[in-house]
Length: 133
Image (cartoon, one colour):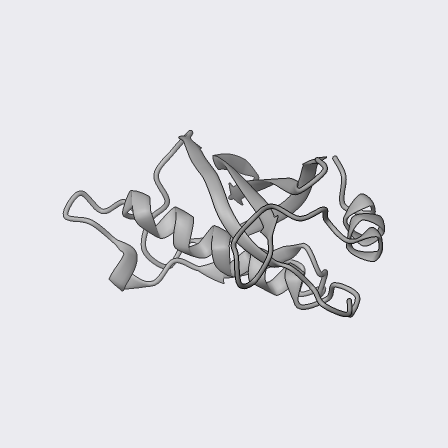
């Protein structure tokens, strides 16, 4: 790990609590760390008046190799697609210079009270564009 802070990169060491009886990280822990990485990126978004809420519409993970206790891992978040009311994020998990997993997380913008889809605000859309693959 190079120690540089980047909005779309989160570096961790795999904690013992995430390890299963076979010595690999639990599948659910990949999602938890990917969501934490997305939250880290999301904190840097521009302020938008009357910002919609964002809900997870879909998520999927492809595992390439199991991560192990105390192994350094890097979660890299990019934007795969910006739709009218949705954003598809791609989270790449790397360890020891190898691809360990790839996650797709799709968020949909919704009205905070009615939960009906809303367009992604222009300022948010522009900011997200800087993270497109």
